[in-house]
Image (cartoon, helix red, strand yellow):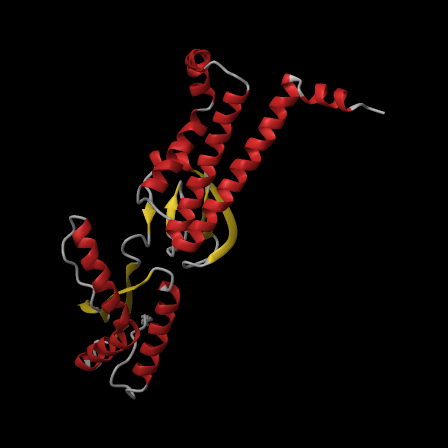
Length: 293
């Protein structure tokens, strides 16, 4: 049977003590992090701010653990500094992508490049941001083999280092709306005044609410950035040639509802044109073949 003295002597060994201290430090830092996250859930109502704060808590926990390990093992900080300095060139070369990705992570959290829920294009990939990690940003991709701004089912992880290499296209950000256009060809023999009136009324019905909401967002944006006042109300313009008259409908739409809004506009336009009983007709390409005798 192992005596109490033997157990005490075993536990008092320097290596065993350090292991115990490490376990205590890990437990303390873990509980501290859990408590901090509970406070964030309780007092921070904004989802994006809470998400970013949790990321900072996780990063701070790793740093605290590293410092605790140095203290427990009685590392001489001067020696550590010298060792890091000597190995700095090699580390910078071997882990340059990792270092730049970590710098990108810090820039994302502290800057306004994008946040979770934004639709962005990063590193040539377009999608919705579902997670921002220390090294990579995870996107739910849209497009590719799928037409329109619809999910294709692929989860893409893009290195944060692309933040410093390629442009970052944010389709939502401070102004969560996009301008879009559709073109409607109308026969030159149609009642053009009636055609324009139909198109304007349909635009007001379908996207008028977006115009009101986007006007408020644009006003806030002009206070933050140097941008000119833009027209967010629906607009109809016309061009014509020898074949037909082409109406261009320009409007503002929610960045996630571009496809469904365009579908609704086309359906309503076709229905309204058919109800005119021939006063307004959609143009179509026709060919005339002449045979010489």
